[in-house]
Amino acid sequence: MTSPSTDSRPPKTVVQQIIGQWPLATVLVGVLVGLVIAVPLDHWRIGSTLIGLSVTLGGLLRLLPQQRVGLLAVRSRLIDTILLLGSGLGILLLSWIVPPTAR
Image 1 (spheres, rainbow, N blue to C red):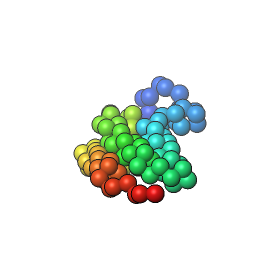
Image 2 (image 1 turned 135 degrees about the vertical axis):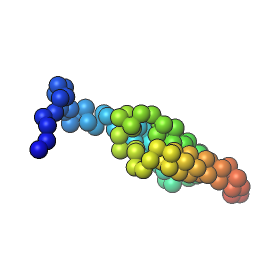
Image 3 (image 1 turned 180 degrees about the vertical axis):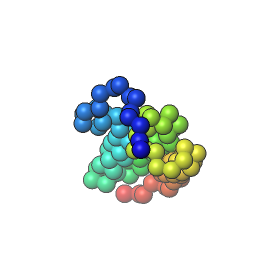
């Protein structure tokens, strides 16, 4: 038998639940803006730098408490942080190592 909930707070509204996912939304918006800059505008270095910075920011945001990160938390905090920081820094490194194309 389950015990009744001792939480006296009212349930969150849909808007509060969506706003509660701001860490994931921040990363996704940064990646989307980077893709828009990289692909149709043909500024791949700026776009891929923005994508790398967004993913790196996701790794730093994953260090927030579990109640704050929302859907950004997939695995354990250590694994998520290592993977996001490693991917973000790798994208940044590649975006600045690749030589620009001559036009």
